[in-house]
Image 1 (cartoon, rainbow, N blue to C red):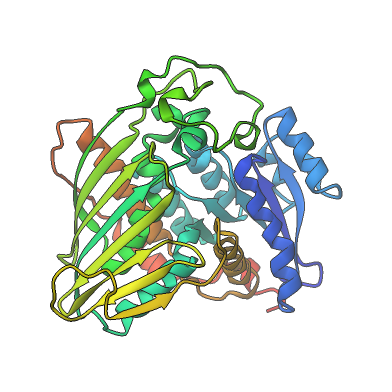
Image 2: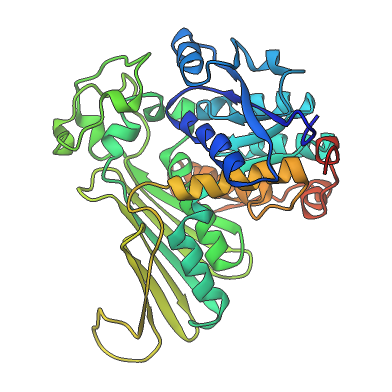
Length: 404
């Protein structure tokens, strides 16, 4: 199997809103002569999902369950709901099918560890889609940090204004903690991962705080089974308390905060609110010789750097433009999918690490445990040494040797 003359056979598991990322398989293959990859199969447990699969990929095999893909796929893109990630990934890894797993890796630390341990035991490639590391704003901030413009990083702060939160997370399964644990995990896993990247370490201790401050008061609820977010999204759904058709169960926090100590001593914080009018992320990274801050997080925004003492001043000493798309993260999605496909087909190393994905889950899941238990500090447990060793010095999977 793998990068032979027949090409890399890719399956898509879960034809929900996020399955659109699989469209980048064809785009990546068309742009990269070394890649011969195509979507050949789709699995979805729902009739509507299978119908979407047939419409999107008319030549693909469409099946009910991911276990039916053995023998039909070399790699799989898993974009199912969060609570299913661990079980599906473990099944695929044991079947020898390389896995692209949409973030978050899992909704508990225990399940995240089970996935990584299985990947280490089987040697099957595992990749977690933390695409935001490849976003232009993150790449730019990392470049500024790496070239030493602000000295040694000592603190990282992130404020996340989730202006579309009511539509994105409170009208379907995301609003139920049984499915996602919390939005401090589900939504924040991108930012927690980026905080780790900018801070140069992983969270070792967390303290969380949060509440269901607004959406719990909205009484208009309904079951939206069979609908996708695009069916109800509108910027006219405002103000937040005027939202209609929320999920029957709403028990995740809509405002939350976490304080972190990284394993290298860097101090970090993250704040998330789902009822703001604007939608963007604001990072501040403070070093021993200055600080940086992004104004806007897509194309058209800027990252500013301050390296001299003064009073209040929004200009900064240097300003760097953010390139990339002006909305969304299609550019980061393409880079992420290309990296995954090249890693499986050609055996190339990846920038995105399953260990980093586990660190994001640990920070978010344990911060959630903290905020729901009186904001007690919680230490992050370590992975088994053999699992760390596997991902630090990975072995070659059979699919990476054929035709390479």
